[in-house]
View 1 (spheres, one colour):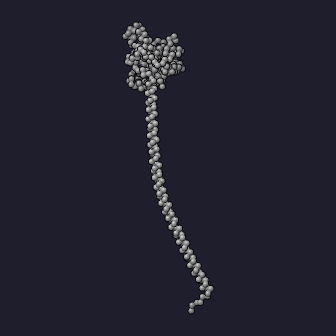
View 2: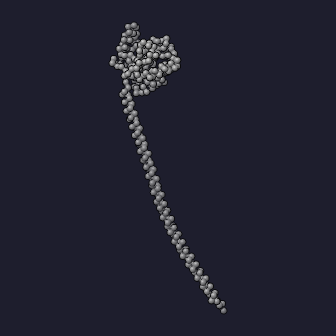
View 3: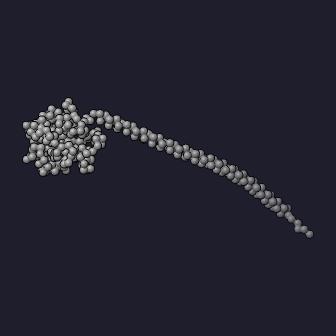
Length: 296
C-alpha cells in the first residue's frame, strides 16, 4: 500500500520544484547573458587587434617615411655644406687674386744677371730707416715700406740678444747703382767689379727689399763680416723675419757676400732655411707661389 502524503508535503514539494526550476531558468539566462558578453568582448578584442595591426603598419610606414626624410635632409645638408665650401673656395680664390693683383710681381724675381729692372722702376712706397740703425748716420737709407716692420723686428731682436747690426746700404735707384758700378769699375777694372757688384737694373737693392749689414769694427762690405757674431746671428735668425742670404759661398752670380740679405717673406725664407738651399737655386715658378703671402 502506497504511503499517503499530506497536503502540506505536496505543497512543499511543489514549491521546491518551482524553486529549482526557477533557479535553473535563471542560471540558463545568466549563462546566456555572460556568453553574449564574452562573444561581444571577443569581437571587440578582435577589432582592437585588427586596429592595432593597422596602426603598427601605419607606424612602420611613418617610421620609414621619417627615415627617408632624414636621409633626404642629411643629403641636402651635405649639398648645402659642399656648396658653402665651394663658395668659400671661390671667395678665397677671388680674395687671393685681388691680393695678388695688388702685390708687386717684381719682388720675388731673380735679378742678379737674370731679370732686368728698367730705369723707371721704384718700389711702391719707401720708408726712411731710423737713424739709430744706420752705420753711417750722415747717409740716409730707405727700405720698402712693407719690409720695414720685419727689418725693425730683426734689428731689435738682435739688440735684445746683445748683437749690434747696422744698415750700411738699402734701397738704391737705377741711377745710384749705375754710379756705384762705374766707381768700382774705375777703381778695380770692369772684370773685377762684375764679380761683386751688379749692373744697374740687375741689383736687388733697386727692389727696396735688400740691405747690406755691418757691425761695429766691420763697417764696409767685406768678407770679414763672415767672422763676426753678427753674421752668425743672421744665419741662425734672419729667416724668421723673412730675410735670406742672396749670395752664399759657391753661388753662380757674385763672390760670397755675407753682408747682403734680401727680404723674400717669412714663409719662403723658412722653407729655404729648412731645405738648406738658397733663393737662386730653386725654380722661379716655385718662388712665385710665395708672392701672395710675402708680407703676411
